[in-house]
Length: 168
Image (cartoon, rainbow, N blue to C red):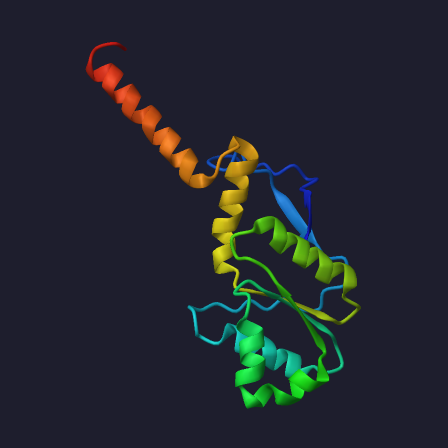
């Protein structure tokens, strides 16, 4: 599901996103369900994922862990997951939250190895938005997001100073 391809229909939407191509994510294996969990830190999203792992023991679960130790901590601290820990019907793929390419690589690994009916859990998607923006700035402009904003701010200040002095 991490394999993106440009939309063949040629999206007719234009506007502020003109620089961004339209992509459609297509699964490599048949997708039965998509579940989105939303909530702040500590609200139970990872616990919910592990509850699915526990409830569906006959399938393998690929856990993309952006918090790097969230699943390990839950598996060892919560005795409710002791049997899940022993059964081992999961693979944890730890990824740095600010590395979009590493997140895609983890999703590709899970997608390539998952069998029919297996689950892929992408946990911690909130920091992913920043990672995508950083990746895009580096890819398109050759600098990170902070440097891009600083450079643009300097250009704006220089333009204002020129025009204020009548240099036009």
